[in-house]
Image (tube, rainbow, N blue to C red; front, side, top):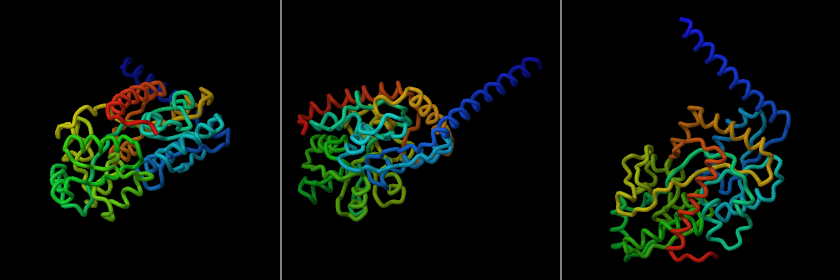
Length: 329
């Protein structure tokens, strides 16, 4: 009985300490009175925008200050990244981004206008995801092999595949798929996943490559069909879709990531406190369910863990980009 009481008292004290810390954090942000901007480098309506809005709503409740999503679309997130670099490092401006802007873009653009290693500070990560290959509803293909056969017969081996940004992971995937299946596939770059999806829904383009969150709602609605996903593990949100690993295209097991960044020079206390708030938001069942439903594998990463994942992913794709013969432009 005494041990049970001690255990109960210990749990109560631990819970009280956590609550006190959360209240102190919220009070500190509330006292500043300054709203927090979360920059997103893609248009409203895309997967990244939807993710940012889910998190910002809960972060607002957690911190006690307004957290506003600000879309700065263009150049694969480059414009938003440049805006982050130029922002005052006072804790009022953050950047929510996936791997493309942070790990890929600086390797494929000669003068991107920012260096993520020196100009940004990792605040925290919250998910990984995979890229997917999808076909529009106007194509007869019901599988990836169907798509390959359809391109060979109806297009004489030629086809256009939409990608959310030029010189992106999806564009390199299009090139590798074309090489493997001996197809003349051309990547058609868009200003984000939303306009690409609009053209796919309108049957203006027969196929597209993007993240699972970009496609999942329309895939579930039967408006587009995801026919393959990257990596060696099928996705819980679409268990019937095979992986490219199963289809014979291997070597893409290092998963892309989502993270939040601040300008270099941002006070460490802000980074630590905001990251702690992010960890609590990601742990909310409702948030986890929403993000999982978008096709993400949810998991909080500390600033240090996000920095490590960023470095590893950048190195992995550096090898792939060099092997492809791509020259930075």
